[in-house]
Image 1 (cartoon, rainbow, N blue to C red):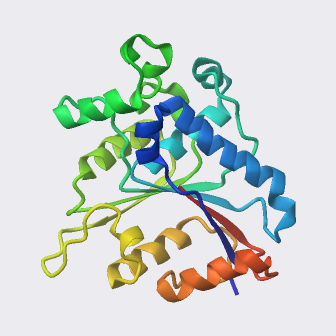
Image 2 (image 1 turned 90 degrees about the horizontal axis):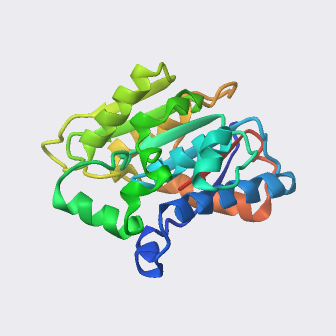
Length: 246
């Protein structure tokens, strides 16, 4: 039987808007979580060689940057951010908010909230734009997903072009528009009980769980509650894979 441990970091993007914490601080927050896992992993029956990092929407972008910065000294110096030594074996990007440079006013407004005044003059800003990062190929294998009803699907297309242009290993899962049911942004997280969500999450978990003995992972509501209990009691069944959802 495949054992999975799950830790969920609550995304504090909205809180950041009001606390005046900007993007570099948000990335550091992710790295702090990764460092905590690294320092506490021995307390759990976890295979540290099978760490799967999952990010949704803005969390997908922040997770990507956290891994890139941890892997590259140049970026650590530019962002003035410490690194995590936790090895991420694979990542999943769900409906990622991956593009910063759109001209529409709503994206300008978001940049104004998440970046300090005069951000374009900051050295790190250029390196927030994924297509400008030469170290992008230091990312681990990625599972990338969006759907026809996702209002940010164009950002996934942007990210895929970068991955393909830099020969980054990845798998892409796309669902066309659903006539009976509107799926929408990160639907598999918001509605894990849907059949489409279960199929997507099963595929996502199976994409890079190398060496596992099972080919099917039931990730519906019936599974989420037992996973939380497993973490609380440090069950020995959690011996294979560690998932961090951001």
